[in-house]
Amino acid sequence: MLVIGAGGLATQLIEDLVELKSQDVVFWSETDTKYNFIKDLYPLINSDEEVKHYFENVSRDFLLCIGKGKGDGRIKMADRFTQLGGVISSFISPFSRISKYGTHFGEGVIVLNQVNIEPDVVIGNRCLINKKANLGHGTIIGADCEIGPCAIFAGEVEVGEDSYIGMASVLYPKIKIGKNVTIATGSIVTKNVPDNVIVAGNPAQIRVQKKVYES
Image: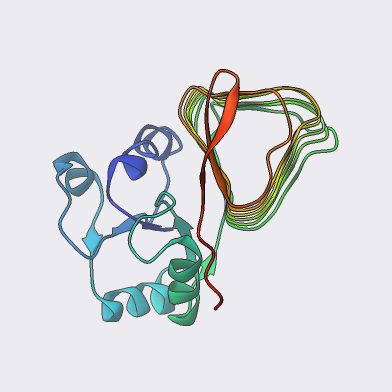
């Protein structure tokens, strides 16, 4: 398993990887890591040639362990390592509680430890669910979202793709969050949120209208 990233988010996998006695784990970063224990435990590579060699000779699986807005972005990074021969994989911490009833995860999902996911939750491709988040029953999360630590989703919340839900935010039941939304840390969201905005506060209000550029 190649872990893409060697920063703070990647460190949160360490205990799980060691506990699981995971074999053939290698970390990748374009620069050195300040977390020396990563290098003490696992090899660290940084070149495309090393990545190709790993995919060809060890394993094609890779984890996208970088947050939204880091480097080239999660989608571009996923495409980059797929083009180098890898296959994006998911990682679900064994120290999280995941209901087996009606839950469905897309490709490349990472669920860190102490997360609680209730029945009938759907999580899209390449999503990242941080520590101690709680996703209530019937929640639907679109692709390429990041859910911050300790965020709480009451039942039947819907989140559009490419959104970021900040740490310790609370989302009320049955609300709908649009695409490309940022919810600031600690926000209490009591009503629907449109696309392309930043919201904050208690109750959360729209603070910024994001600029959207045509590709």
